[in-house]
Image (cartoon, rainbow, N blue to C red):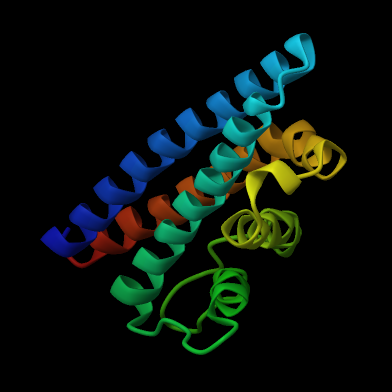
Length: 161
């Protein structure tokens, strides 16, 4: 297997570990927010939900740049990158994500945009709650699909040896 693919696989696996930490911190922050009523924990939750999606987006950028040599541009590049990960690119790669997972992640992408553009004290717990409730399942689905994609990269790398 070539060094570029090995490096890419290593970087993606490290990113997945960091994303797991953001998931854990978001859940812990949500529990503390609910237990204490202290809305400062809500800031923690929001930033970790932001980190969750941003980490996945870094993985998607790595795939787009290193495998496809084609990262979307323009005003809606974040949406287009997510969409790109859910399609097969003939003779290049299978889909990285299923359409269902892409759809679930789109909620987090939209929330990430809100976090970047709104003061945290304006964030709504009712908007955050379903994101936290679904976070572990969405991450597990995305991680499983990304791991499947990494297996594809490893298999392709072994065939070329």
